[in-house]
Amino acid sequence: MLAGYPKKVQLHTGTGVTIRPMVKEDADKLHTFFSRVPREDRLFLRDDVTMRDVIDAWARDLDYDRVLPLVAEVGGNIVGDATLHRRKFGWTSHVGKVRLLIDKDYRGKGLGALMIEELISVAKKAGLGLLVAEIMGNQAAALSAFKRLGFEKEAVFYNYVKDQAGEERNLVVMMKNLLIEPAMVPF
Image (tube, rainbow, N blue to C red; front, side, top):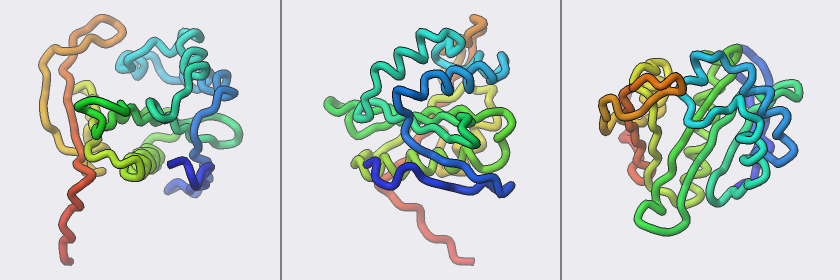
């Protein structure tokens, strides 16, 4: 599943990026990355990533069969984090959940799409049949990006989640079926 990493890719701007699985030694770099994320963006994250203990726990408890974190690096700095969460057993063992965060200086350059495409590829190799992205309703750019990558809006749960400031938000659930290839559209 991890064959082919690290992988060198190029953004629309020509910037070279390395995408690879996170390793325990990335804790400092990952904390620095999350510290650069603007407060208004951190409001939408599940965990308080400003707390070093959170990042250290992720690094200490790495289990690629449960959570595969991919990082994007430029010049030794992490500029993107994408994760594939899955269960090995049970009724949702065919489902993966994806999460993504891109450094504000690298947004709109294709990095997010590249990282989600990597997770889609890994999920297919792992035999998953469905990917799920849970996004707060006011994150228009994220909703649009997932839609472009073939995710469809399946449900909206109104006032279902609270951001880190305690404000209630709608949760949009988007899914991508990995078992059905989209029909080719002739030009």
